[in-house]
Length: 109
Length: 112
Image (cartoon, each protein chain N blue to C red):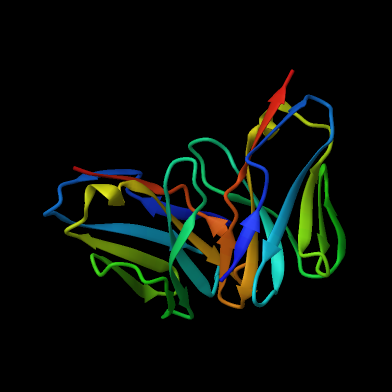
């Protein structure tokens, strides 16, 4: 099976930078994705890493180290609207993603 | 069109009722998914359809019955549900693989 670990809560102030870590254990590995979900909303795809390194998409970046079974999501220039839950999701086979328990990010003024 | 739509938005049903949830995507995606999400929990995969064929069933009880009439539509038929089945039911689709999924807004189901 697969297991993922990410912090349950993170708090930061507007304009700051925050990093949300995700470690995983899986018998196979295709890649690691990140999703954002606002309260009452649906998950929204943010980024995907299949290879080691950093992927940058605007204010959001995602990093993967396959050898360490570790990834992170980096959010820069935090805005109030970034307050949401963030899920990492691992693909251990070609057919499905398994989601971590999620990190609740609270951005304070 | 990059949207996944789901109907109804809300559904209240008794334990003896039969109802269906509907999902539609017009992005030409080859895979469609059903998830169940409880409050403050991650989405939990139920079923995966790939090229209109059921490819993954995550040992879901038979009171949930999926159907994929065509490449754009996905249904979830509900029968004899239990109160613990109350949750947000999310549909998603993807083109290349499960790493980039587009989710619909969900159906909030309450079983009384």
